[in-house]
Image (cartoon, rainbow, N blue to C red; front, top):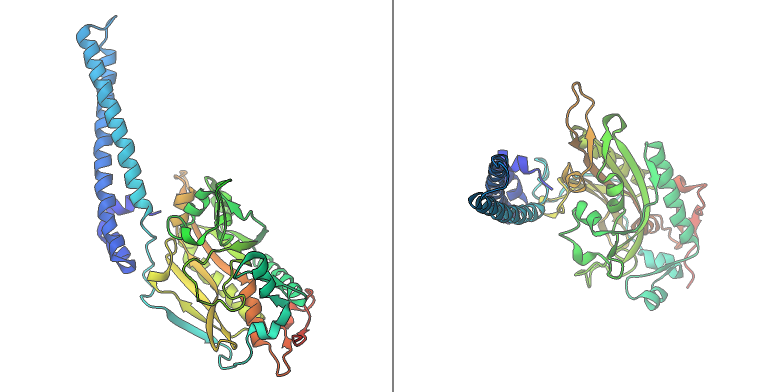
Length: 414
């Protein structure tokens, strides 16, 4: 959520920033300002009326006269009407405010922009289903649960566990605390991270319990400190969450339906940071550097892409994707992403910190950032396709040695 005080004090700057995303979002600023002005007017009237009521009550001497009773009744009726109007206007303003996305940073590009390419992006070959064979069982997965579900079997299970183990060990060395969060959350967690209102069509809902399956552990990690005031000396707080993730992928019919690139259930190791707002840009670069180092460790060719403003999502002010080279498709595809959401999520979730100043100052909203360490299914695709040998076997990177995965996957049986 944007700061209403910023919109009041710098409306033209907010309009200009939002216009870079979407001209209709900039127009919504006028709606917010209009409702806010009316709300403030009613609030002022209500305060004045309460002063009149206090004065009228203090003027009483003994039992009120008929005229005084009539005056007090009129003031009370007026107070109820103003209170109802204040509540209605505040709700309308806040709803309009919630509809506004985050302000993009000035260096967020208008078009997707490739910043660097690393590794050999010329290799072609078999795709992951050919290399995995029955170790990725799409047919039985579909029979059990429908399309876009799979059984992962045999050595690929060991590979998944090795990837998670590797990622967690690496992130612990980088100062992250491991977390296994719930995957069922209440609606405020999705609103707080900006997925509501925006991506409802992608999210599984359990109406009987009014709970939602998360599409990323970012949702649960962001809510870890909801409604808390943190001490400045604790920041930054860094968490590494592992969870299964669930996405309906509504509207994606016909896209990436072969294999496990785009499925309804997948596992992921996610990074999440709470930090001071002034440190957010540097922290974003740190998360990106960790993502890149994982790609290097896993020997996956990749490129870094700064994502276009109109594809940021509601909460992000700046976003980078890492796209892996997939020989089976002959192109780069998104493998991980990292976003700087500034204080947008923290305002919705009411997460603040107390600056260590003298004299003490009021609590300030933190900045939040997220980044994928390992999206397991897609990483397995990249490892299979980039590690494939002429005989159909797959060489796995030394970084996974000793973590339970074989050094070489045998050719798929036919």
